[in-house]
Image (cartoon, rainbow, N blue to C red; front, top):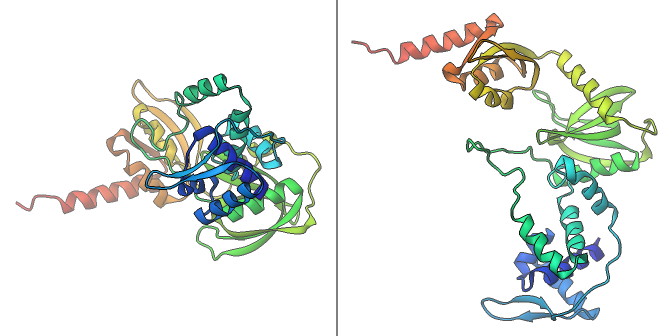
Length: 323
């Protein structure tokens, strides 16, 4: 692990020139003290790193210094495989390996190509924090140690034990046989079996996890493209709150961003879209539809229509002019 970090440190200095200990620490996701120890280790090994003192100082390499790099390590190769179509830089805990792998790729390019690549990279922005309507897009937080343990168990084929906080329940420990991981709309799920039964867990609800030594009981081959739709269908068949609603097309995405799932969609006149959507419960449905103001109309169920009507009546009475 440290050898990979030392190589990354050298590549950062080669590609960016002078950098401070804090800047290097941020890129490598370690402390500034660790960076100083790594700098000392590189100097001892004969790598020409020197320090510039003063207000604008930092660390640099002697001009013209080059390194011979070995191939990508396991996590770096995995990061590159998942990055292209599934935003691997954000999911599965592979952001640091991906950054390290890309530094190696860039360093291997001829000098002229490297400058052209740097310019091209600045002309593309993928998944910014807000969309065109200034709505902040927030991914679920997953504890780094949890992600590492889950990913390790999935890849090595060992059993996994984790502390899980399901909604409205006390956290409990589970021991499962992991099958694979899926990320949808910035939510990461573990697909597993428990006592032979299919189970799906959201990683953001795992408080702690540990990879066990015994092998998992699972098929040698896996087809997540087939398994995930089956798990999704099972999820929708469980007890959830189904709603039929008409919505203005301009507010459609806003509704979809709050719903748990979408079962059906079709035009409903010139200025409306009819959707069958699933919410967690009645309270969730009330909150989601209320955000849409007069641009949505609930068609079913009656319980939701009644709840919205009662809320409107309460507000109307509260703001009624007493005169």
